[in-house]
Image (cartoon, rainbow, N blue to C red; front, side, top):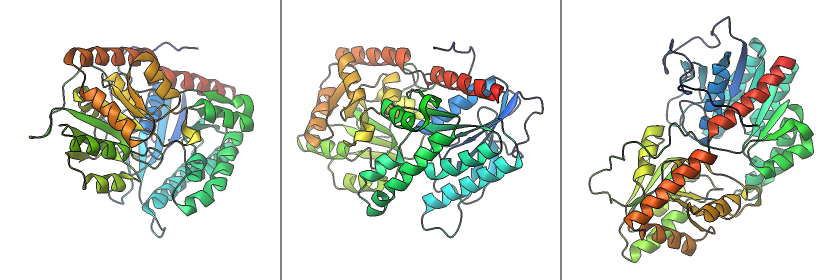
Length: 423
């Protein structure tokens, strides 16, 4: 069913508070319809695909009268102090500190978030608890939420087991079976599992049957559109450039664009690359960029307005996926956000998204390898002004018709609300 979109600004659910204000955690209105806890490694004030999905779901639930609490981890380099702030949907967001004594900062952040969320579930009875991966966080918190009588929802947006199986790190490969078992536990124990791809849906249905629903990823069409200001580029940076905006994890293989660009630079092409975001493999990408001949600009996570302006001004939105079976039907948010702003897709992967781009003339596709990626980038550089304009309009129009995350979030909210009303 397609749910009717609400009128008005979905990103601001209340006029009585302003984002960023410090507030006592869990101190929302007594007359709320109910109370929901959202737990996610990436949530406001961070940007990213998970933050976008969870934020729009929060806005839908808040608009339906539910009070929202959220627990997340701090931005890398943001300091170790825990704090609670008001988010853009008038939710109370607990931004956790780093837990001392653990071998990695990522693990320490996840542990801190888990403990904070567990304490909140024990302290306060929630009508529903929504948990985004990783499974090492989801499995115990879903169990605790069930014990406390809350409706639990597992947002199955990623398979850690699938990534770990193909990792270059031996320890992660060894942990893939554990991750798989925790994903199975999370789906089996939750009242509702939302899978974002058909393969994740199939995997979860084997564990949880009809309690699994497929809701594929979209993007925020209010934030990402063809209309808006261009990017204010640094002096001397090329007018023609490509944008990679989002996570640079192992599965993405984002260094492929550095390799392809360097091949084109050695052939005399004049253009730049802009990488925006974060990720475990960003250091590898930077190391490779330091050895190439052309201009590469790295930016930390940026507000949606800045990312949208980059896409509008670019020759294409870069996105890639290594040939990992678990991700053949992935729909990268960075691709959809770029197309929403009129940036042709430069997509280095095979699978469902590649087929969709080819079929609808939304950009240029190749397997995840250097020569094909270089050819895609060169084809985008060779577009005439009229051809580029035509493709920009086609990409934006297609995105408006097919990639609306707000509609998808509304459908999830309705499913969750029906479960809360029956509980």
